[in-house]
Length: 127
Image 1 (cartoon, rainbow, N blue to C red):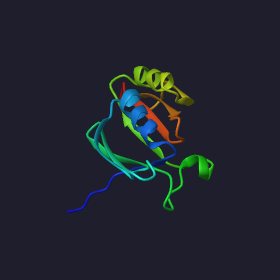
Image 2 (image 1 turned 135 degrees about the vertical axis):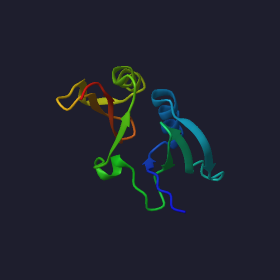
Image 3 (image 1 turned 90 degrees about the horizontal axis):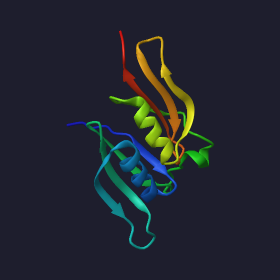
């Protein structure tokens, strides 16, 4: 059996998990914290039927602010892109490209979460 999932490295994993749960509607499945340091080594979350992981920066894994940004964009299709975008902004995300109707039949835009990860939030609206 094979499995693949994104692993988001952040500075402040506990706050990032709270953001993904409250702003995006993710569900936390598991969390493994180093009791001595308080760092989260691995947390599994589920969003839109997909599992992804979140961990604190360290052990050779840099977070986007340490690298000067991230070249990866997480694409999330939702029923109401405007509502999800607003909720993300209310929880500290910043708009990179405003959510708008696109010529290829989607309504979407791009936001950066407070931890440096980029999210394309979109919904299908036409052909």
